[in-house]
Amino acid sequence: MRRSTAGRFLLLLAVCGLTGACALSPQTVDIAPSISVNPEPIGRGRWVALSVADARAHPELGTRGGVYGDTATLTPSGDITAGVRKAVAEALVTEGFKIADAPPADLNLRIEVNDLGYAGKGSPVVRKVETSAKVSVIASRDGRQYTSHAGVTQTKEVLEAPDVGENQALINATLSRALEKLLNDPGLADFIR
Image (cartoon, rainbow, N blue to C red; front, side):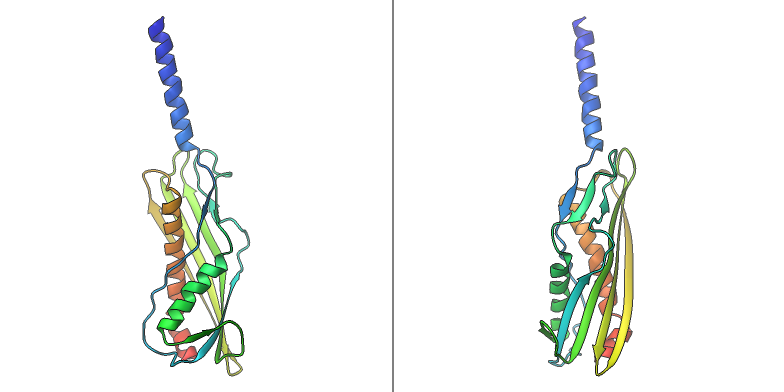
């Protein structure tokens, strides 16, 4: 009889452990992209009035998946525009521009984050993570305007659901790639020269 009770206890413990391992809790991540651009000095010391807008339809990035996928949300820890502005400003300084907080300036750049997404795939255990980012730029100078868009989607196979640090790295890597595509657009480079 004692063995049967101990066996049931171990089975119950194992089931509780597995269920808990499949249930994911909400997470918040810091948005801090890093952008690599061609260090060619196309700015020549000119001033850029840089603004960044969060144009996403939803404040959440998405859901982490798992058993309770709808409640295991992934959200930014705050306003995403500050991290994006910092990264874009650093990239523009690398290219020889000076950053102005507001017009007037030699050039106006408005960066919009149109979408930033995350989806944990698999139930009850997450086996794949998909991240996506869509960004756009509206550049204006001398009465002319240039608009461009860039998007990136990345998928990663995982053995277990990523922790907050891994999710933060995945989101920021995807956003960084989208911003790099946007800022390295040859049409934009020609327009801002």
